[in-house]
Image (cartoon, rainbow over all chains, first blue to last red; front, side):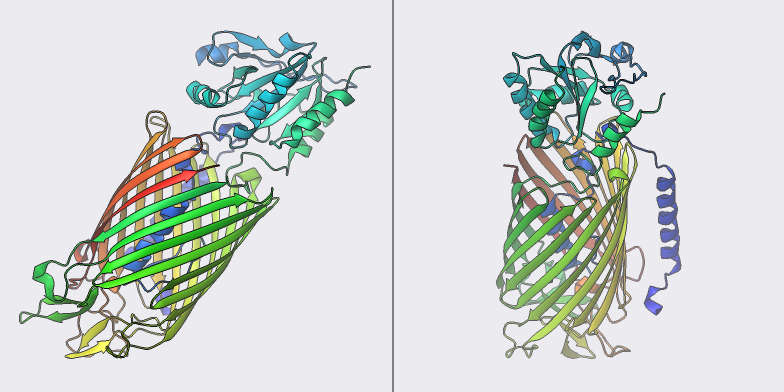
Length: 80
Length: 159
Length: 391
């Protein structure tokens, strides 16, 4: 698949990100149930404010050429 | 904080018993107070030990329910010792301002007691009989726990 | 320390698998909630110096969103969403060069007024470590209609310290451009999209959570913009894009707690690539700072950079190599920076939140690719106000 080949500046960036990811994973430490207070803060949630996230996705995908997230996609719009 | 750590002395010993395990002893400061209490101070009463924190979602539901149970059984020999595990004391006091309780709340920011008591979820609670033995354990919170507490107290009543 | 006795271990074992725990990535029931959000979106007018013809005033959109989450019992959760938006303004139509070869924008003449309504319903089911969610949605406007369905799942591992998630979705869209006869637009057309995604999240330690995932989407059908034209070799031709497109996105999220100020740092990165040879990087960073009791201030910054497909040009002095062409500014090579400030107030069962975003796109902000003179690149601001109640 020709389109899947990654050009060199992108390859460097991808490598940097994968390396960063591996470092994070190696820093894994067991977290006891009573030690999860910091992780329970609203700002630490992976799934953000649903309405704001939906509006962000709608605005950015209507004005930019990229899209895609871990959540399943919705329908399109005739946005100009 | 330093004071709190000094006051904490957790007995690692668990005594075998034909009626159940003797609950591990602890001495902890009262929340927002210089006083402290030990589990053994309450020997001779049914004691319900509840591990909770202000950030724990189900605890928003459990505290008011436990308070109602405590009020109802105030005349009997039933006590509640709530062990708060917040890192910051003010998070707990602010939470209790919105969900006031009249039972005893202890503070263990270092998380020494839940480690000894093998807490595996938040909240977790234990019912101890008048001998200080563990009769039943609950992980998580459901409204049905209240009925189970009553049943356990009846079932495990000393002869 | 002494190992727990058999009786204690039996008590521990009985605690596993019960509901009502505080677990982080776990299948815990969401709280019942009712949310409303108002958003005003406002695009800056095209500068007179870049405007050849038409109305310089671009889109203004007012949106109202409602979301209702209701736990039907201990395992089923129903979520209903509704969106209404009203748009007005003109939009970029095509680009022509002036006598010096500088690109000038021609805007649609009359102000477009349009409304869009969207309804989403989803049903989630928690079953031990698993959560399954089925969703259906419908979006309708004068000239566009979308019907879509999705399934997503999640499996919790390591007592809520890690989770897998996956999802599939399908959308069936129909386009019926207005004034099709008058402007020789396609009268009716359709497109559809299949999408699959996979993700993995992991609590790293007491202070950090990381999530990585990828999605693959396949679009087929009429993927051109029926309202846009391109100047090709001095002819004005309808926008013409390939009738299929495969999109790939790799997303990463990190949440890092900062103990000194009790703040949360949110870092997100997405790499995007598609079969039209569009490439994009999107990075965002937010600092969620709790203030005095109940208040929370969140400044954030977002950077997006994209490289145009080969069939994009503001205009085509000579016919393009392939059989496709587009002068839609949204396909151009550009970079965009946006800044947002959000203030939230939370108390007990209520949350009120207000935010303001400024978005600025420029060819020169692109990280890769060669930006072309694209007068239609958009700058906008957006303000939102939302209320949440947990009854």
